[in-house]
Length: 264
Length: 326
Image 1 (cartoon, rainbow over the protein chains, first blue to last red):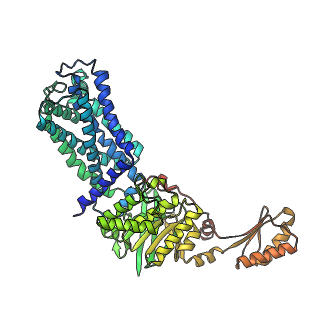
Image 2: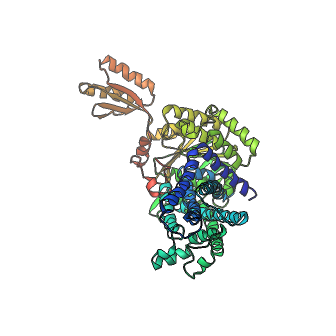
């Protein structure tokens, strides 16, 4: 038990080493979000009348931040599935290491990658005109929220990876979860334009809460989300925190238990 | 003392539809090598996975170094080394990275992990490739590194799951000499293989398994006697068939078997019988198209033990694991 953290850190270090040996992974995992920033900013930005001082990009950036960390789910899942397929997980499981270390280590590694990706995106956002106006403390808190959200989703990723097992299928399942969640939200367009049923879903969608929370913390009026009197859209900070804690409370023990019982 | 002991292991997949292990029992005496011989899908890998604590049997029990694998898997993991059929190392990392990582996971500490990695790389002749990613390694190098990773902390019991499957003859020879060296170091080994020759080379004792259960157990000599040892095989032109058959029958002392243009019969004295047959053929002015001694193969063993040839069950289709069987 006393080795749990040090074992996990060895696994995390392995992931960082992988990134240094295969820098393409790092490059592509930062290019994609930067590309999204540019596409949404310049393709939609011109035609969406947001009525937002500072332009659509102020509303857009929180949406892209949340979307990007949401992809952690698929990244974690496919990374783990890949290790299982290659027999590496079998090797780890035959070692006298603490039980959760392998999956804990992977969530740490993916969280570190998120820090880097968020930093690169913040710079890209700044370049295209994104300006948080709330001061350093609130802005930092927004990034802490994003980091935690990615971490919580990483644990769902562990669970998905263990269940599905095949790396390519996992990738697809990951996207199948992530895409509707990020688009059926207030991330890119107001929920008011959606059919009533989808609107309802979008308001209770954790992605919407996260986006609204970030907008609030970056100093914006919570425009796209505040369409109804639903509790989540009125209280995005609290809702996001509850969602994150709930996800971690469910998926950390569940994933560690599944890992222990899985036979690869 | 029995260092490995498995009793009445049963493991089924798909809710009992597929029986991977069907009351399998085996044991390995301390300091010896047991070769577990069988075709794909016979249950070799399942057995190793249960003994190495990766899989729980439906029923039955097993101990490794006196420790119960089901009740006390953590303790078992401290005394075993496992080297799989497919190199279970991180391919994107270098050989050195991998060994240091595994050293850290065995809680050796930074400096000791580095020292041990260098030592093992040297011993397995991988020093030159140490700083290259594993994916640039040849099959043989990969297996050697995989084996090195299972020896970071000198294990009491080493499980080698098909250590040479897929290697070219040279790679196989290299691997054999590495394993032989280990065995002289006193480690207890359970080795699975599809090759009778490999079990012959490396194992003190052989357990033949088929359909999830042990069907024969003994030394390689004992098994061979049971199978019938070597066979003399001579291929000749049709016109010479009758005369050749006569010669082979005389040399062998058994009735020669003729199939198309090949005459064969079991022989007891190997090369001496071969030479005698050659001389007789020469005297009779018969020029054989092909002549040789054939050692019994896994198929021969199976044929003689079970009356059927080794049947390949596609284990990949029935077990949830991926890409570990070929």
